[in-house]
Image (cartoon, rainbow, N blue to C red; front, side, top):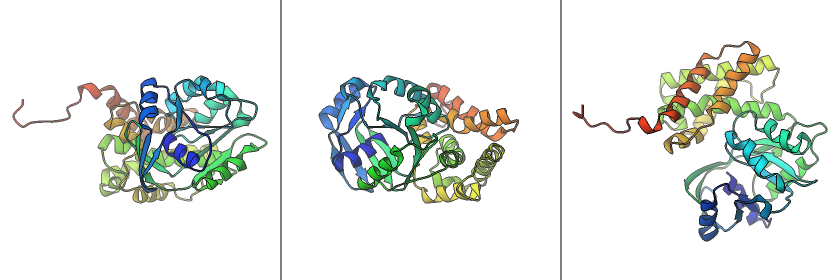
Length: 306
């Protein structure tokens, strides 16, 4: 997602820096650039990129696109980018990212949101723009961050459809429930999003996982932007039927997933509220077991091999 947004912003004339913690990938992208293909066409971007944030200096806008479990390290390591007028935008999956960022840079400069833009990593410096969709941004601070309108306008002028919301918490939880219903199940079954609806077992587990999330949301007094959460998740699965979810992409690459910040977030919030969440607990256990056993799993079986 970072590469995708970098392309749109750079293409509209803005100075962009990519910050990457892996020096070897930085050198590769410096030499070869970033290739983008998919729904927006074929593009080649040669961005400024560094593994040392100090090289970029103080910036106006930081867009955080790292995995949820890397948020703390990423924002602490990039603190040299932050000046008096810097805004930090999180467009990440899961719950807890805004709180982690705010603890480092201050809540008054943090905004957050969700994006329906889709991107799939095909290789280092090579991504597929898999889907178009709106990016919605909001502020949790009071008074609302003055930079909110500026960032929304920046995105729209750069070809990224964007709008603002006055209910960021409802937005984040609404996206979380969609991820709760889709991501872990695709990771465990290796099915694409739409295929989850083809089988009674996965469709029922989807409804039960989301239903537990709804109980948590209602207990917290959060207002969702849609009336029926299960219908919403199913409609998203249909609309993204051919997509490989981010969690399944992680599993196929034998990488750590964000399950602790998605299904695990429902479990931890449920425990605080005295709400049982057995389906999300089981999905979290299973995905974490999958992660921990990557090197011992049987990927191929030949009849008669014993």
